Length: 417
Ligand code: GDP
Image (tube, rainbow, N blue to C red; front, side):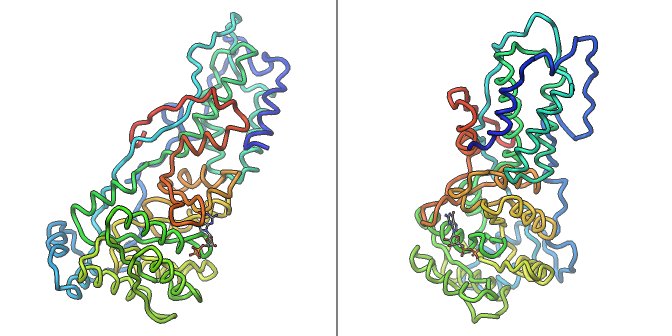
């Protein structure tokens, strides 16, 4: 069964194509209460999201001076002092390097309009189609906000458009749907490797903090990212800052040994912020390039967890914060992402276990719900199984059981487009 099978069945059973249309002069322009820009669901710009890392707590000393920071980072051999200064500084906005991405679309330019000059309108038959689509998307475990955005984009694209010939209705619907899904995935899209490279030119070590709920694949992702960067010739330190979960420290140190990273840890129950600080001190002292901080994820005590994560963030002042979500968790992963985004402001998401997810709901919804893109995806349990999240590959795979893949056109999208 394909992702869209239910909706596809109903589009195929449109007996009378005129049931979704009316004469041109009867057409009421579509009034959409949802926010759309150029017919696409509007995504809030990154700058519109308030950074909450430092918003609720007073920070002793606030240094906003980039020059001071890079000079500090350039000084070797003053590890402790340097880290203390880092600890009390706010992180300047990390420059995330945007990446042009590939999207898919279905070309409809050559389709011929029927002679009757009828327009697609919100008839009961059209509304039935939209209801079917809504149910299909919810069954795929997409979040409500993302489903609303897709429906809104579909309406904007279709209502008022010339009624196509019967044979072409399916293709028009496919095209509208694909472009709506495609636009969900490309929110503020940035490139992981290029961003790390650009940061390495300015600061060393580059600090990456991973956040997310227990069991989502955070520790494995820390190992996979380490492996990816080590393969590129970089020296990596991992910080076992999940000092709460039994076994987390050993698990990370085992992974680190296998991928060739150094692991900094403390006793179970230790101060996670101190572990992060030690790891950065150690990286400075040994001239390592990257520090990856693995954090706790016990959502049963959300307030304490968020306070702990904020403290780690304040002390470590990471350049990149990544939320790790489990694709299998579907809408739960979306809710988790929203919660983390409310308390903390992450830069992008890693979607783990994409290899085991047939429904695609989390992948389609996280970016829309949090205004942060999925940048990396876990596609297996091996260290190599971490890929750049590519919207075209994901959508082609997801939709290929429903829509003839030969209809897809892969199109280069502008960065952030
Ligand atoms: P943590 O509690 O968030 O640190 O989660 P772990 O890193 O311990 O991962 C939990 C389980 O998910 C482990 O059995 C991992 O091997 C598995 N896992 C993590 N990432 C992936 C992935 O991309 N694909 C698959 N199939 N399994 C994964």
